[in-house]
Length: 194
Image 1 (cartoon, one colour):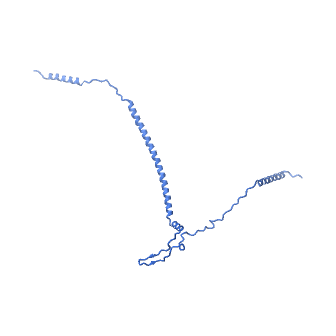
Image 2: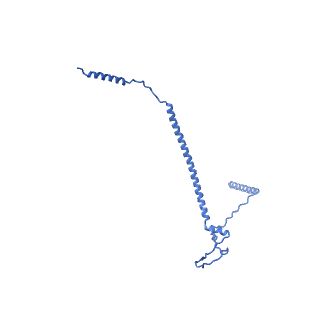
Image 3: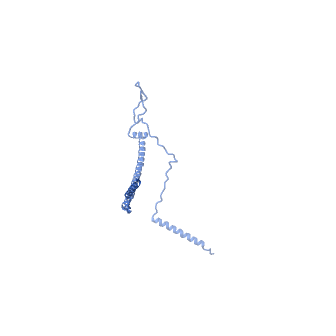
């Protein structure tokens, strides 16, 4: 009797050897593949240069905007003060006292007291024509200053200038006075002789 087992064993051995032959890997020598440095360095340099240039442009733009903002703020301040000045001038021109003064200077007169017409056709009040004789004086009377605020003027006289001859005479008189003072001092210092 024959056993099928050894036959199967040979068959499995062959299959295993064939699989080992197929699966056998060969060692390939290691190749050191280094990436070239020049493109990497160039890329990093360009990124840094672009960042610096971008930052510089951003800073320059911000400075220009700051100068423009300062200029606009100054212009706004000037315009605000101009507006306030014009508003004050307008208020002065709208002053009723000033308007009435200018009207009187032009020869206009005010109408006087008013008169009213009633629904029945009657006139209520006294009517009078507007003339220079019956106009109202709109200017207040002039105010006189008190004596304390209106002192008499102080008059200061200037001495006339001396001529050359007067200056010489004055100088000679001073020299004579000095000599006389020295003589007197010498006489007082001498012991009295008897």
